[in-house]
Amino acid sequence: MCREVRPTRGGLAAGTSTRYRVRAAQPGFTVAWPVFLAALGSALLHACWNMRAKRNATPHDVIFGIILATAGLCAAALPFAQSPPIAAWPWLGAASICNVVYSVILMEA
Image (cartoon, rainbow, N blue to C red; front, side):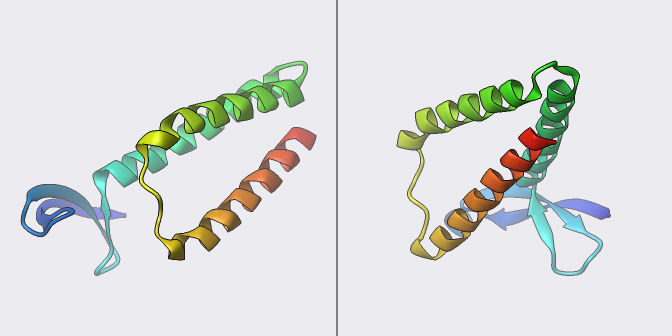
């Protein structure tokens, strides 16, 4: 549960910009607004395509189309993204495996 929103100094280089953070009820835990909004947007998109797939006569095709569209958008954005640090690669691999398992289960449901 969020208690307050207050500006904090920081950014990529210390003291270069003001960013707003959501302060959670747990002391010492903050989330940047863009991350918070991205999580909400992700939840909304997941709910929408799950509902769309369930209402379609061929949900397997809908989910497969969404996966292809997402892969295409990610491939188009890839040249503009920075390479993640080496320590993040195992987490990226684990997240990818979880996403594939989730997609397969969703297509079978």
